Amino acid sequence: MPDTIKTILIDDNKLHLSSLLILLQRNCPKVEICDTCRSAEEGLESIKMHKPDLVFLDIQMETPVAGFELLEQLPERAFDVIFTTQHDMHAMRAFEVYPIDFLVKPIDPRRLVKAMSIIEERQLPLVSNALLSEIKTVYQNPEVPSPQVSVPTMEGCSFVKAADIIRCQAATEKGNQTLFYLKTQKNPILCSKTLKTVEQELLKGHAFCRIHQSHLVNRLHLKNYIKDGGSPPEPAGKDKKAAGGWVITIDQAVLPVSKAGKQRLLS
Image (cartoon, rainbow, N blue to C red; front, side):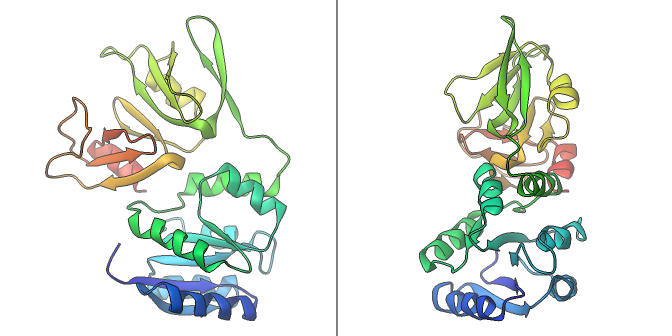
């Protein structure tokens, strides 16, 4: 993140908009307010004009999913997003499932500062296209459980939530088995399928990205992207070179990114 964070606020409620503006001015010195907008249409034009680093976006404006609809019109997003919402059970369900920053109105200054600290440390766009689609689906269907996948093993299969999978890694040099690393358990699951089959069949349609011939990562669980060049951060394991840089996941794994993987990751 640059020294100043160019920011746009989008909310159709004048009182909420003014309150957020004051809170940012008082508590977040790095924030540079470029514009405040009272509709998704105004927000869309402002984003195109100012090219912000960060957008505070109300989900419900002209329509119940106006915030999502706005982002869908910007497929090449290069800015972070913090969603704002009233105490809406639909929104709470969506954001409990996915680790995305959101603020419940009226906004608590301490929660705002915490959200901004996460933004300042992040080196990847907060909301990818795939992740946006998943959040919107859960938001519109709060009673639908998180999608599960069946992971074939030598003994049978394991049923896990796709959102719980942090990353997948080729288990051998031949790549005929795959390790599944989950946030819900310490030891990985050994899957009897190749990483290619895992990517194209088992996890197709979920928020996964192939960053390297040996690594498939869940965009939900990425912490940082480090550009190529220089020495890799520790612990990088045996992969000491990476043409496209490195990613760090929430389980502190440091994974290499290929040139092609970098394009997929940052698209």
